[in-house]
Image (tube, rainbow, N blue to C red):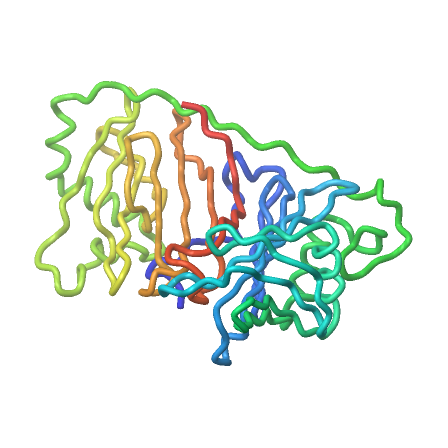
Length: 344
């Protein structure tokens, strides 16, 4: 299930942080891949969702550039209150690969364990975390090779000795380097004017917002309005600059999510509204943030942020917590497709 107002996790063009590289998100069976604009990739695998297996997840992280290794973490399902084992070990195809040192239900795999896991994921394998109490957390390999192949492709590793799936003889030095973390310096806001509040009741401003909503993302601005809500939603105006304002209003509400719309407008007609997002959640005037549940259980989330650079709101962050598999409340991992260093 997706959030009420979908966050576009693949289309990152049009933001300063993504001018050089677009992030990618990919799902196949029980695995998900998220690669960001610095060429860092994260792949997460889970238990088979179709069976009555205990929730578990593994996160593989690899930075971009030649010679980079893969790190691996494991998390036992903790969404529901569970009795964690005192000791845990990794087993692959019946072979004991040694202890997994647990801290709060999570463990970091050793270099040897990670190498064995990667080799197992390239083919059909039986992978399990086994507790001293006899419990078994079974990690699915369905979709793993497709996710890791996509990781190799994104990072430019195909046909190199360091590729995870499609190895070859192409020189490791040909792998593209990691990209630096982009930086956005937030612009200072200017003081509000007495006339700003009056615009919150302007019919002309409301009409300009509706005109800018060409995709119909803001239900509250349609003739039908929001279901189960009487009357138009209030507008909130924040001054951004000498002639620019930010206007926000509730756009949509579902069973477990709501979306606030944000626009940048001129402070006088013609307003020339530009929609930033219709799935926002909060702002401090210079930064707009969004957090949307993937489903009502709250075990997976989608988040995004935009920062004011003095001319426009630039998208700076976009991420997911992984698949909805009841591993942890609030999601198991941080898997961005867009990252930026934001300077106050």
